[in-house]
Image 1 (cartoon, protein in one colour):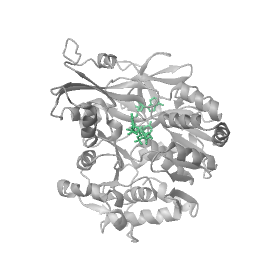
Image 2: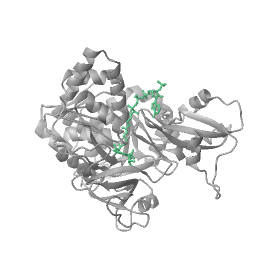
Image 3: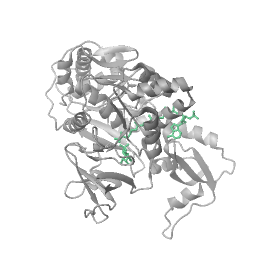
Image 4: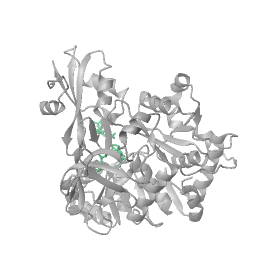
Length: 492
Ligand code: MCA
Ligand code: AMP
């Protein structure tokens, strides 16, 4: 098994997590994880990769459940606390989860699923009760986690990582960014994606450091916590830095000085999950003196490229491959490109995922015949460092650091009785990176944006809901009849 639970024994009474105002030691986390493992084993000797889904907000309990599932030989499937029921149901059914562990705050929300999916929904309280069963030995090549990612299909795909993959993802970052046991990080990110799970929480716990959870991002609270002086490391998506800058700009001058001074004391501030706009990097540096370390990653690979911890951090660039990551840039014929030429990033190495859950064809298509993972991101090697130039698909949108499939939103929109056809695109936006926009062909000339947004809210999480709409009689198409998305973008 991934070496987290075992390493925790060395850190004993050190604080592992701060959650809901309480501090939890590594010993307490270890004991709770073993209780969870015993509960989910429920008399079996090994879960043998059964999928255990859990709907638990970022907290001590979240970590104990994740580690407990791993220790019992199961595959951890974290569910997103922001998702509406249909998105949750999709993940539970797609993974064929054998159990869903639910936090009391979400028990009522999930209740209707039990009869629909037939999957037992187990309250968190019963899973955390004291109990001990001998735990199985888990080979590191076994599957450990499934995270859902949007792609160029209308439904998200489950990305399966093994214990060895996760360990490789963690150790590459721990060594490159010099994690130490005296570090203290704030987690403000959702815990159904790599950024929050691996880069923030797992790297801290691997190192014997402390991770404090703030279950919902709030710029005011984050500035207060920075002001407390307890953080040494901070990681976020560019939108969060944008929002922190906006709040700093509104503060009185005296306050601004204090805020800037406290932020200047952290040893490391990282940005990732989406392109960091150079003006945001520069503004943050002007305010705090900190040059954000930008890195590049993907659910399927963990982190791939990173600017230097102790050397150059070049604005608009994502640095060099992390330890154990092999990278190449290729053209459309899969031939390596020359220096300063654009090509698709392809990756090999121990951090690269095993497969898309239940999708052998998609897995096969995601790799070249000689085992390189095709990221779909376009980059160039520019005077010694990599620079991301974009993606090979207009159907992938990045908004607030979330990867969103235009096709998934179109699929949902087409289910509305008044919508005949639609095209969804991402429009450049300073704050969100991109915002989602939908061009609609409707039967009903009186259809209202507000009513449509409400209808969508029952079917999609808030971050996937279009913020701009236009109504048209016909979508722009090329001679082959394919919708021309760049033309749709121009219409906005
Ligand atoms: C929310 N709003 C938006 C969006 N999201 N408007 C436009 N576009 C959006 N995407 C609106 C809401 O409707 C609401 O408006 C207002 O903003 C506040 O909404 P709320 O949900 O409270 O937003 P927030 O909490 O401030 O969220 C911003 C956020 C969040 C914290 C930046 O988007 C976030 O957690 N992003 C991180 C996602 C992440 O972890 N990605 C990693 C995946 P109104 O008030 O009018 O209703 S990528 C990954 O893992 C790879 C491996 C990697 O490289 O890291
Ligand atoms: P996800 O699939 O949610 O893990 O998102 C991964 C995608 O986020 C990558 O394929 C990139 O398109 C994008 N991404 C992550 N980090 C960066 C970065 N620093 N600059 C530009 N794009 C990024």
